Image (cartoon, rainbow, N blue to C red; front, side):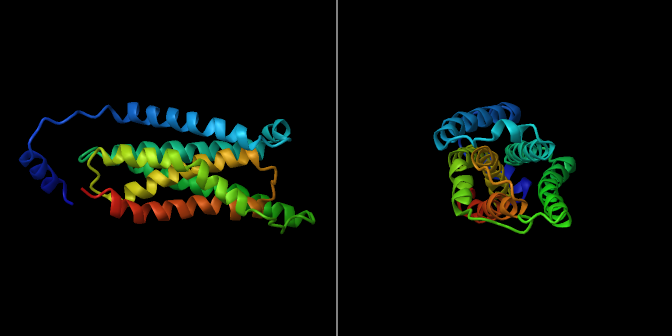
Length: 214
């Protein structure tokens, strides 16, 4: 839907309309809700026994920082994009892409280094369907909440908004899964932790076109 057509439709509809809080306020509200939902679930699943050791590793810290950046940039971008006429910065789009590629790049470099060092686990993937399930389940309630928040606005690009919403939620789910799963095999992380986030983004693209149209 074009912005000028949207404005005409809004002007023709009867009021009053409830003014939305600012995008920053909505972002902080969503992030707080996501943390409140996910923290008890992560503790209930059980933190990985080597978390203190893992948290001291630069690779783990860098990976976690990139995942958090991806979640924050995606959720912030979708809350802005859901408001017709709101400015959408190219820097934000590049930031999301770079965070996603950076996360994958860190894992790919770790896999290559492990192979070059001749480590026996370099090409191991290991079982991980449970990890993918955890990524999606931990991101479920935050994803639903973000969909509802976007739906209360007036997204003119529902598919894109849906993709960003579930990308953000699944990224937080992957972060929570990293705190639970002790398998630091690079290929395991690519297949069972990273890939579900991409799948969630694609699913959001489809669901957004169906559920966020108005």
